[in-house]
Length: 202
Picture 1 (spheres, rainbow, N blue to C red):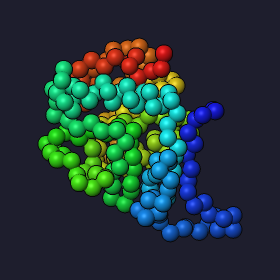
Picture 2 (spheres, rainbow, N blue to C red):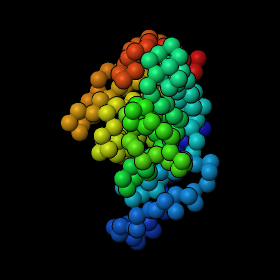
Picture 3 (cartoon, rainbow, N blue to C red):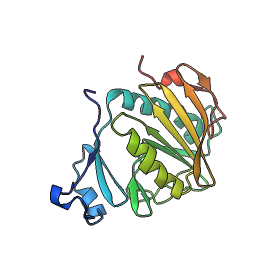
């Protein structure tokens, strides 16, 4: 699809070395990636993805805006959360950047001085695109499960759907699927009604 971000696995092995395991990528490797790309390290591999296409950005911005006031600032909602766009998470050996993440304030009472977080979030959201959906669903969800992130949302701006996932005994369970122009209450933010039309480009 024209204009769609394309995931790039950095440092591909030459044809004659396909069976060999290259050295794991390091944080220094990540820092060399140009700033217009989102860089992540999962399972020792460095991945660089262009900034999101407009529909992807609109869905992420709309959802973050809908949650930030009620849950981060306590305006029209219960507060008690920190909601942040594209935080860099250092989780064990992996470095990932969800589109949005949230921490309950009792678990993250203060923001770190570093440019990254080592405390796993209580909720993450990945906004899917055709070129990155497999990476988000397989590789990154596995990292979040290993780090005991209890809630995850997968937002598809093309299909106009949200999959609401809960971690149960180390496995992701689909709690609900929302679509289109619904007004919904979904965990862990069921304290407010979420108007899905705020996420989709008209």
